[in-house]
Amino acid sequence: MSQNPDQGDHEVWREPPPPPPVPNFPEIPESLRQAAEGKKPPRQSPLSGLAAGWAMATDFIVTLIAAWLIGFGVDYWQGTSPWGSLIGVAVGFAYAMYRLVRQSQREEREAARRKK
Image 1 (cartoon, helix red, strand yellow):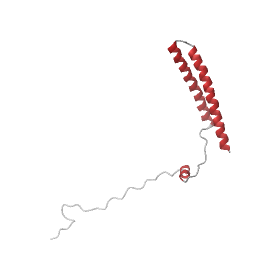
Image 2 (cartoon, one colour):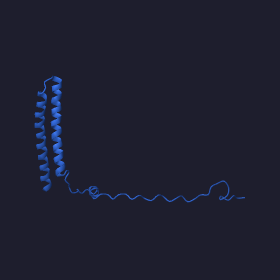
Image 3 (cartoon, one colour):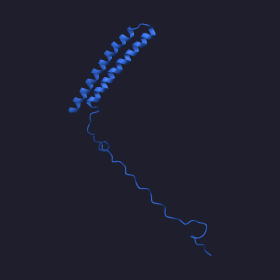
Image 4 (cartoon, rainbow, N blue to C red):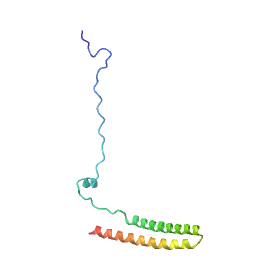
């Protein structure tokens, strides 16, 4: 006597459910596609004029405050108030101006290079 596989304690094999749908991936940006092909994407300005101005102003103020704090620390440590603070402000102002001029020159050179 042969046993029928549809009978008994064994479960009948069923077709597996279909796989989940393939997700819709976002489209690859053109700049990345060009970079993958070895082409140079068009250069865009790294900072707008307003952002560059705020960056330079913030750099100036932070440099000045840092130098003043160093001078204040020397005053506190040596008891030479107010000379350390005054010298710190003077040195900080000079260094902040130096950094401001250097950054401005760098931006001008980059703008001239982009125009070519």
